[in-house]
Image 1: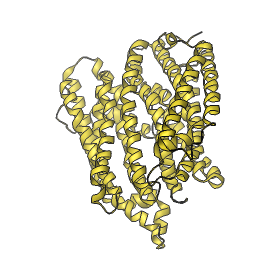
Image 2: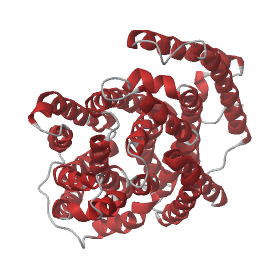
Image 3: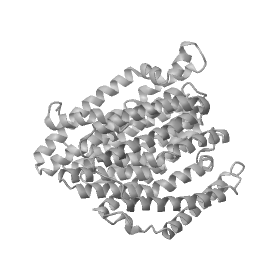
Image 4: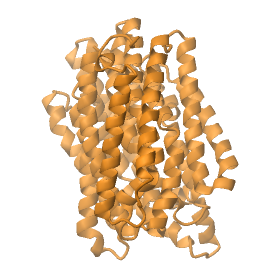
Length: 521
């Protein structure tokens, strides 16, 4: 089973890497076009709200509630019943998100006032920053329909993942990045405010992603006519699980929205700096954490349906060891290389050296919570696969409350960096609470062997961190040109990989430890 999971994880990680690389190219285009000014703040704001709902309806709560029930129905071997279930879920979900999209379009001013309260207050007082509120209200009308298309895309992807066809859903986000890049290149000059070209890129990306997945659903025999099924027993199970899961799986996204609300009261650029640092954080998080979570949920659901508790625990342990192998060194590298990475990737056009410095500070704060964010991605499915959504939501509410307290404590002395610090702290709290409950329930507990494995990985990562910290300190990043920076960062990353690989070997980490059914001794 571990070999199959590893193979699936590699496939999803490869597709996710392609998506993340294009995502970085997209962000480079945005940074070059708008920098970290007022228009950039508004675009990221207008994109964040439908993006938040996407995490709820498409990738987050819906997927976590839908996949376990779909696995149950699929394993019964009744094709007619499976198609009927898919039809009713697609019809019910489609109707709900269509209405949600309409509400978002017609109520964009209310949303802009709610989540951009600082801008709204300036608007009421005729302050210059009030123009951000007007721009955000208009831009939301363009970006909000994205929720309809991407929710159905997420629905199709969840079906394909359950059928162990992971590559299609993992590749799909590439199309969004291509759409935004294309619109930025071809439409930016057509608008007085170039940010509108990016907004239309988001809209177009939603349409293209949905159309891309339909042929694969057809080939799987599950492209069926949608129908309303609110009271269907299996649909009822999905929505019953989904309602609490809205909080449980999306705490980090809710926290980011709350951060946006607070950041709207801070200096211009705060939202953009947080966005760019979050984007670099999302690269390893998506590449390792989300990719592993994607392949493990259907497997854990199947383990639960088959009452195989041993395999269930072993698969969680496998996921933990794999994300530790990737996540711990990635967190250390992001912390040390925050400023060089910002300079290499984003510093051009309207994005200044000062912007790079400011964004690097929040990236350092975020990186402290990277491994915790990854842990949540594998611990939460351990509950959802057993159709337990109440536990994650309880901890989600606790975590969200803690995040707000951390925000209030840290935002005053550290401004926007304090918001990133609060997010990292609340993510760590969430991971701890989820793990403690799994251990208390006797579902999964980290063994002595796995603790030794984590220690070995941490020591290897520390050796790597010392090496790249010393080497990058020899380089004058700020006054180098792009070619010099790109060559230097490539050398630093290469050195880090070499040191980490050698250190892992010296400390006893072997490839077989990721394939064996138990943690290494």
